[in-house]
Image (cartoon, rainbow, N blue to C red; front, side, top):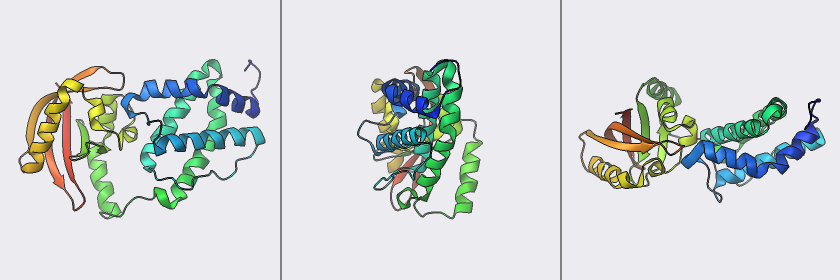
Length: 241
């Protein structure tokens, strides 16, 4: 793409030609939070690429094809943002043209995603109560992670956790928490999770995490149990040691 005004068709062709480069940049930035090759999330990103390319080539945006997808809307929103950021970075001096071309398409795709029955949130606590709890967690300066004590998957996190681990908070949702723990420290984390599920006392321990770039982070942690009918969560507060 030259210095002149870039046509939408040229942006589409560039996005298709640089697909692997864009994915590599996104994966490097997300680290363990990047979607797996066979995951539903990777399929959502593939459908967004097809939707965007077709819209830019034809000059209009058809309704995105989202049938059969089951996704966490918050996480996929963060992944879409990460993909667009990677495309902008990969475009170098033409990043502005890529950003302008993709912005309305991302908005339309996310609106369509919110409208699908498969992306609706599960019923649970009243929304007003849930929003109040989430708002309080978001204001906590320490990193907060709600982790499924059986699977080890991250169920929720606050912005401080995202900042500590080097990715957007919502990109952490559904990710294996152990992928952000050095291999030599994982046994210690599982020991703490097992202990907190068997008792009601808060556990305090020193451990290590690693951010998306692979850098080790010593942390002082406390973990408490929160149980529902469906699962037991380990609620972790972590502060750099």
